[in-house]
Amino acid sequence: MLFYSGEGTRLHLTLKVCDSRAQVEVDESRQQVLIHATAPELDVVKPDCATGSRVDLETPLGEREIVDASTGEAIPLLRE
Image 1 (cartoon, helix red, strand yellow):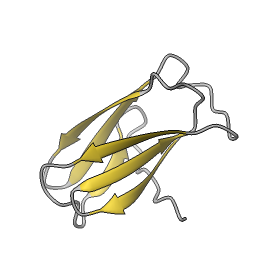
Image 2 (cartoon, one colour):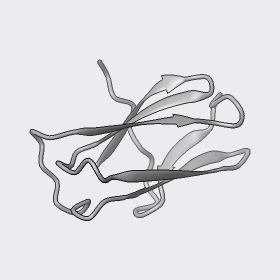
Image 3 (cartoon, one colour):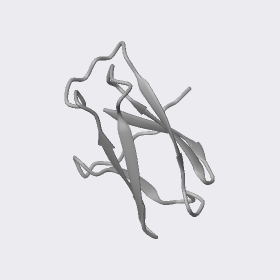
Image 4 (tube, helix red, strand yellow):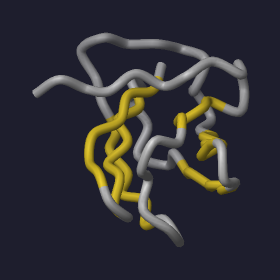
């Protein structure tokens, strides 16, 4: 499970996994920011664990949707 926070050109992604080997890649378009997250145990959701990753976008986020590439679903904003 993924969550994001941030704005402008910097996003902070939170993956609910206990694996520091998680990697994140981003594909940007005018309509969306597609997040590809990989980790050896990415499919094992552990609510008491979180791995963070910072992503720098080429252009500001603006009104674009942030989408999980593995599910095609929008990634929710993490309310702090």
